[in-house]
Amino acid sequence: DRLLTASADGEDQAVEAALRPKLLDEFIGQERVREQLSLVLQAARKRGAAPDHVLLSGPPGLGKTTLSMIIAAELNAPIRITSGPAIQHAGDLAAILSSLTEGEVLFLDEIHRMSRPAEEMLYMAMEDFRVDVIVGKGPGATAIPLELPPFTLVGATTRAGLLPPPLRDRFGFTGHMEFYAPAELERVVHRSAGLLDVEIDPAGAAEIAGRSRGTPRIANRLLRRVRDFAQVRHDGLVSREIAARALEVYEVDARGLDRLDRAVLEALLKLFGGGPVGLSTLAVAVGEEAETVEEVAEPFLVREGLLARTPRGRIATAAAWQHLGLTPPQAPAA
Ligand code: ADP
Image (cartoon, rainbow, N blue to C red; front, side):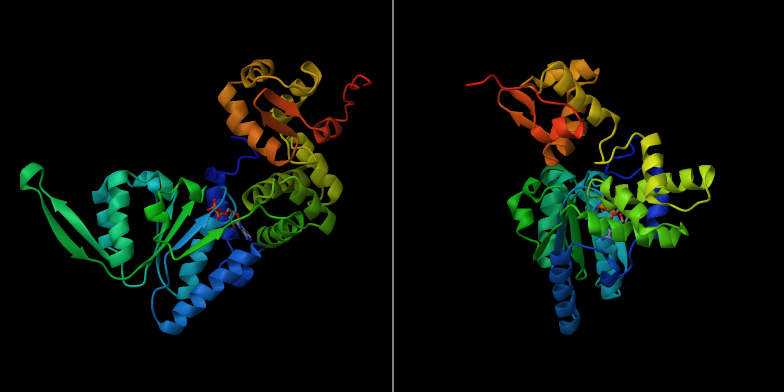
């Protein structure tokens, strides 16, 4: 329910299908991953064989699902989409694997959240295109080998480090997705505005891009909120001023901080002189659970260089004072 979370909500899912780039050339940014992937795909096409399995790692909302669909489209192959949490038993995975057609792309989101037995089944499937289906229980259980058609697994994970090494090693290629630069997000906003029939000028797109935390999903979501504002309160054109005013209404500030982020920073600066202060004390000061502060607000504040986690507690950086327009207390003269 936060406007700035990177994970998809229901509205996102409905609109995102329409906003997804369909081919590698339309995919904005991530130059390195795009180039590497393009080579992997071209080589596979040349050999007339399924490409190596692909692992995409990076925070949510950066385009991993989109890239998996692009991989299938570039290979002219069908795609099956599922996720780690949906595969609780090895049998769930066996059912999916055995119904794949030759060359099909299997997209497995949040692959690090698959159950252990499923993971072990996946090792063999990735390597030998074969699974052992266990029939029966206890001493009478037998393993029935099942041949699979060659397929391409595209796994996605928020952190490649979370994957057990035997699984990680079975991917021929790992693409590390990075947060997008403002100029790239501007292009995302322009492209989406075109598809959604929103009139926007370059400064308006830049304003939205600057508040989108390096994440295309957030950029697309903010664009929709700004569009509402522009259509209801104005003539529909998204300019810098309209974008800034709209996002003020939604409490998204110039740097992409929302109400909670700012509350945490303000408490740290105004109540604790910039810290160091313990997480639980800081959380009480903003009236939130410690986990919420730690998992929801802090990662972005740390990434932006506004807050640091130290063994003595949380401290604000000089940039934090500046961002909130406050003056740090003078250090006593030496
Ligand atoms: P992830 O799977 O990493 O969470 P998605 O692939 O679902 O992210 O992307 C989220 C949204 O952002 C989609 O609507 C997609 O259209 C858009 N998007 C992501 N990356 C790009 C990109 N490079 N260019 C244009 N749009 C993008």
